[in-house]
Length: 440
Image 1 (cartoon, one colour):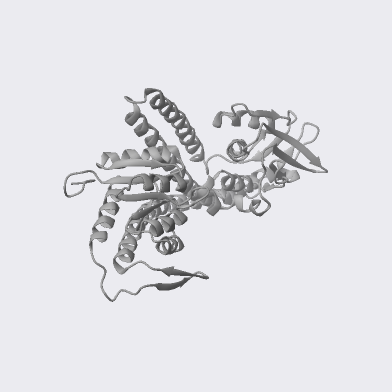
Image 2 (tube, rainbow, N blue to C red):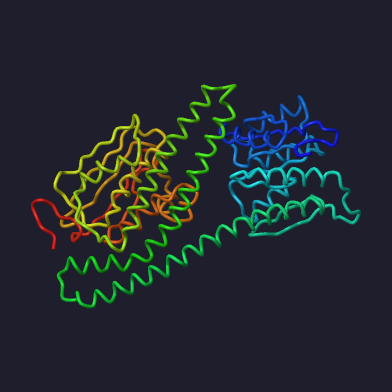
């Protein structure tokens, strides 16, 4: 029977996870599958609980402060050699697998946690534990990979079980990617037809003024922008829906024994619904790309309206942009300002004030977004704008650079680490017009 010994008693699982929300979610998944679950907030507490009473198996997160999952696994295998350990991780590449095997791990589970995969991995590990290793299994394997050498002491059965676990995850991820690629391929065909139609229409507009030529250049970006949007929106919505599902599940679990906490999770779910609503509304705006050209928009009003995407709470937002100054940009520039605000709130840690201002340097202008938080480390100033970095921390800054580039606006981070972040939007003369002059 699922989650039980042959005698009918429940299998006991020690879950080591520093995030209380993640820990409660994994507890709920395991208890639903019939396991007896104990939680530990870090590696030190986990060792203490094991000394007090041995579980049947340990599930530990990898990314934890102090003693991480690899260190905990090595400690468990040293002090309790027969204890099976499964690593739970957000990351997944070959180096993770080799590090896990080198630390003595028996298998992997990748977040977000899937109940069926959790159950199958626990059952596979427990079965492998009961099977004898072949007598000719080598004592140790030295595996060189990506500039490092990993010493694997695991037997063949454990290595095979781990590889099967990683292969299962890889197949699942590959299926999701194939589905996304099919959708993007269909969208690309439609966009190619739209771009072809636009190209035929533009042949009759060659003699139009400079503003018309700027619009045509921006429309040529429609294909690339919409393909980007398909990936970004799907990523954001899946994450938000996963969080919503987690909050509602926790609320359901706690509704009788901890009603106050259950209502707090319901409130968190309501906030997540609002974020999903904003994402969907933003997606609807993005679908107009190719039909709606870049326009002149007042910068001060853009900053004010961008607050509808975020809740600043106790943080003060100062809008020092002079009235009447306009910028020629994609209509989605409003999302750029809201992303800068959200970035300061999420990563500023000590931020109390976010300020938008405008600096003039001759014929050019620079829009400044500054905060008094912890700032951006020197080595991350360019990295935060990359797509690969954004997949882990949010795609707002990557998307902001893409939107601004449509009309030649650039963005960079120039703040002093430890003294606050400062984002500079460098605007060519042709995309800014102030009340005292007109830009052709």
